[in-house]
Length: 597
Ligand code: XIL
Image (cartoon, rainbow, N blue to C red):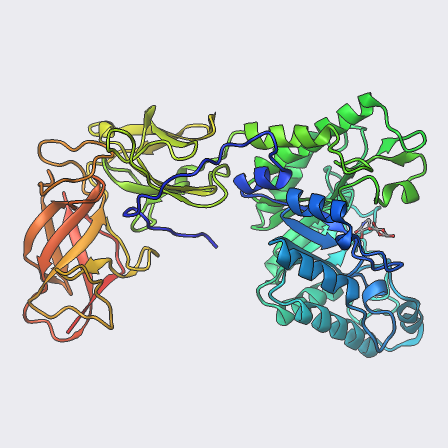
């Protein structure tokens, strides 16, 4: 969900968000609005609770904002007998995530591996009905227990065969499929698992997760076809997890990975990179410097592609320290696959990723620039307060407007700038992914303006916007763009259902996009007194003309906020009525109302 802030009246002192030498992956990813995660071990095997190991815990919490159990939530550890669950490891992870304000991913509800013997035995003789009940019971129990804590689940892991092709989704054998599984054929058993997970937590994001789908080819095509079918049938699936277990071979090539990401994004799904590691040939656990450099370049290349793909919302490594990694046990002769070494020291991959986070241009879409009052797009007008969504590089927490040495609303907030034809715009607030600015009056008279977003000196590509003389909209009281307007009594109380305006009384409507002011207005200036808009302004309430006593700058607020004092028509009976301003022939948005008594 997009946050919608309206804080133009708050000059908040800016604190510095400039990155220091001690920047962690987490801080850098927070500024990119990207989740950066790691698989973690919580003592699910052998009772060793790594989360109580200070070096393990502090490295994990300082460099990552997301975590996932490497094994703790798999069937074997968490459901050790038909009638019992062991939540010890999973609960430790959940508690750690809560304490360290990290997002928690769940892995996994349905897989052909890590299944307990009681389950694989049961699958040999049980009826499909009994298997279905077992699976549903497990999904209900896990998803239900961590409802509101696990924001995303790998519902189904690795269900597609390595030899699948575009022509047919070849599914693997598993206790849940075809033996006779839960009694559903084809992808129907997968679909059922997603539906059960969704019922158990309607707010959780549900993922299909797999490996060797990073490059175009048969397996990816099969996964894409399956997922496309699920989406078409309205199955609650929200994303695809790309495991990304890599070597230094150059797999996947960048173009192919981008192509696959685009294909998933085109279905309206998110992408999580879920299990990244880059294994290296090792001698006595030691990799060559040359290979460590290739590894660093590989991590940074994948971060780049993720940052440049708006649908790619999380990047997770499969563990973070070479001290604890599945690689040496599973790939003979390989190791050293993770960003930190066995002593928790950053390997070259860490500065490489940090550098990528700090240098890749933020993405900015043309439809991302909208009126700050209505959140509607279209042409921009001089002095209009606009909100820009999606620029994925900025301060991790919101920073509000500040005045500069000249008493003007500053056009540089902790390294954020928004340029209109190179002119920096006064900024209302800045947050990675959402920034609000005042369109400089300098765009007046132009047909188009070229907009660039900048953070810490890194600029987005320019987006061309049409310029209009006015583009009016009324602020909503709750900053959602519609509903009760930000309309005040002469005593500055917000009018609401609980505080309706008397018919015949004067009210103050706050709006923006009214264009120029007679005599000119300075970009970023605070309106000192009354003035007059260049454009003609009329108002209606409930379709009746409302007399305007004043329409111009709002004294004390930044130039670009329009204040209209109007009289609620006398004859109105109590009720909620639409409010519309017409400014230079352009109407404010539908859906703004005022309560009248
Ligand atoms: C691996 C774990 O890392 C090992 O500790 C465990 O013994 C086996 O499973 N794909 C997945 C992960 O989806 O769950 C696997 O994790 C690695 C491959």
